[in-house]
Image: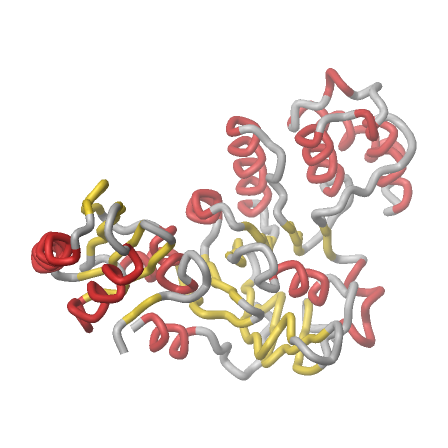
Length: 335
């Protein structure tokens, strides 16, 4: 079922439009001519939306961001940013986008000095540069550390500076690669709210994360990516409706042989459930929770395993993610 949905929803309409800020068709990229970091990726991003790329570390998210921001040229496929070809019009694209990468990038000066240098590099007039700097320092809670050297800040403070500094210049699209890494809960929510405010003013955002709560809070559409491929892509509400008639069962077992128990459980449930296993724990997606519970209890007694935890709950975006890629990228499902 998951695979069928992925097939139906991952390909863009094969027409470019002025409403599309990103158009990608069958992108492939390899760093070593053996393995593909991107393997047939196709999607579009519409003007004024927040588009989320969800995946584990190494799934291909950062490679995709690098391709879209002209840092690398894909091995093959078609890519257009704001209607332009990154291979031929990279400089024009860079003038119209903003980028916050995972790696640090600072000048050897104070926090306030970093804003000044950045604005100067972008050609922002002095009076406007100062106005924006002061607004951003206040908005992102950086006023009290404005005179500290950027390299002396904590990880979370550095991240705030990186994101806030990007708004010194005008842009049409902002690419954020794991922007909330190192931030506490309060600052993370404030950062996401500030991005929402900019989207209301017309900014388009492409956002990578492995934090499902963030994606649920911020994104209009999400693409689940794993091993360089998009497994599922849709609006959040559609994804939730897709799983809306089903329930999730969490369980943990001990004693006996858990691996044999889960193998037998997967076989017994057949098409009634999708089972994802991680060590002694399992997650079941099913539209027949009562029948699944009866099978679990019966098999646990027959196989001599102890049920440590058993819980039935509604589905979340995390369940969409887990049942797309599995906790280890290998969902255990009935044939």
